[in-house]
Image (cartoon, one colour):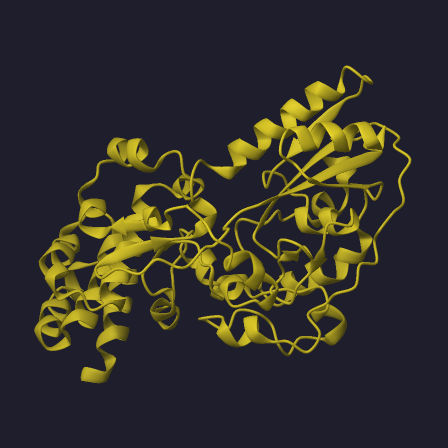
Length: 371
């Protein structure tokens, strides 16, 4: 049964296949509770921790999980261009959620000719912790930056699994050694120091981050982004690749020859300010990062303009002070002060009494040093 699954998966381009019978991850309870206690979790994470550690909450009769990893970012270098935003390489090409889900669905259908079974496909769309499942399947170990690291492909791998009621005879591989050793490059390179360095050692070995400081998270959240976290966002419109780019385990993959044109990950900021929701969906709707929508991308573009000191965007951003959106007003005020503090401080100060208490407090904080 195992051999048939591996063969059919290979025919679909899924060359790395793993299996695990582990359906309850009690070992994760401590780290998940630790994250909640220290406010390191975020709104994208399931609140009910039982749903995260117990696969039966998703698929009651689960007996074996078939897992796959799908490598990406071959030969990737972060594209550079003046006046442009950037999105993570995870958004290169067609949305990987759709691509990998289709491959796993096709695999499940092909396997039906050998044996009948029930299943559920997971591609980053359930409360289950995909990295833990793939680790238990022998496909890698969890690095200090919390990413699954595969010996051959590094951490630039998409993860997917098929929860099944098949009873497949397998050898469990739950104790793959963490090979980060004393390396702490990802910790030192993280723009906002989000990767935990001084946590309890028995916690740290799992790899975890303060999500609320992570640049990738900041580009996706609808929550308020603290002033002190914005500069680290640079020109990122969606996602962040810094910890992975600098990880030695990815050097091999990143230095391979490629014909891929990663310049397509650069975003025209001026165009982004002008796009309607419909136009945004037409242009970017097939990308993994598009799920957050135009407004969040536009907010990040405002921050990017401030970070890159794009003076030619001053009037465009100034117009956002008259926006119906408090979000745009808030970040526009910050960006204007970053672009030209002398020119903007009176403009911003004079608006304080006309804005909501939340925005007024933001303005006052920005102008505090002016007295």
